[in-house]
Image (tube, rainbow, N blue to C red; front, side, top):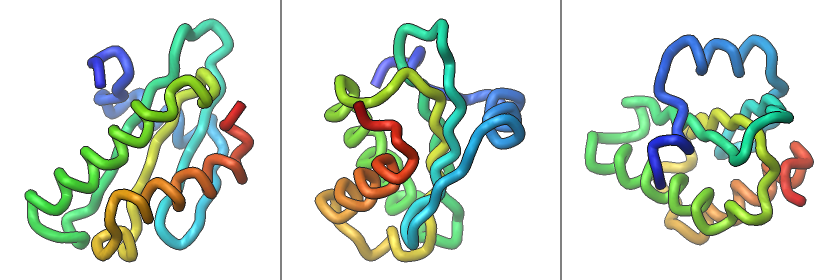
Length: 111
């Protein structure tokens, strides 16, 4: 995933938290904030240390980025913050994909 697709700065995270809307299921919390003038979506990912060691956390982040890369044509141009919850540590990529699709459908972010 290219750098222009990522949210890295704390002030950008805080902007989406304060101004955006949140949707959740058991595995993920997703904050969304519409950007009308944007060419593409941006994503920020948060995985707590409670979910495992650095290897496991990085694997979860890679899987989430991979999901957004695979579905980039079907997603709206929005800013997303994805927070992984405890059950994610026991899931594989296909379970994460199903769960993220479920959350994003609830948030009405899929075209």
